[in-house]
Amino acid sequence: MPATLSLPDLDLTSDEPLEPVADIAERETGVRPHPTTIVRWCAGRGAAGIKLPSIVATRRRMTKRSVYRAWLQAVNDARNS
Image (tube, rainbow, N blue to C red; front, side, top):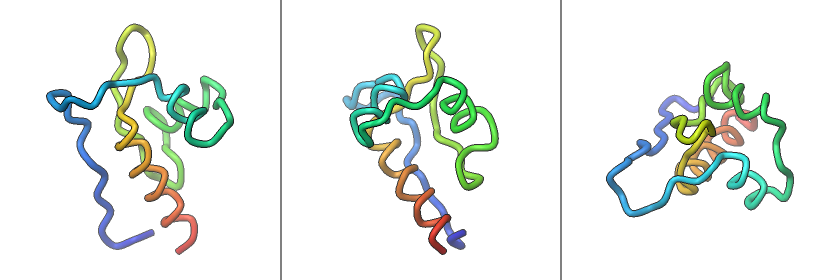
């Protein structure tokens, strides 16, 4: 794992909209993750030990696309190091 890992904060005051994690993941990867996978990424052990910053709104896990992309890059870096 990289010595310094910094993910962007989930800034709720920025203009970037919150979107459901499942929708972002499907758009970015072409595969819609299982709901349990989303819980594991956000509230569980994460992926490669790195949790995806998110909030629960309207009974769904929500994040921002830029945060998801940074998290995905951090997970890839951790797995490939």
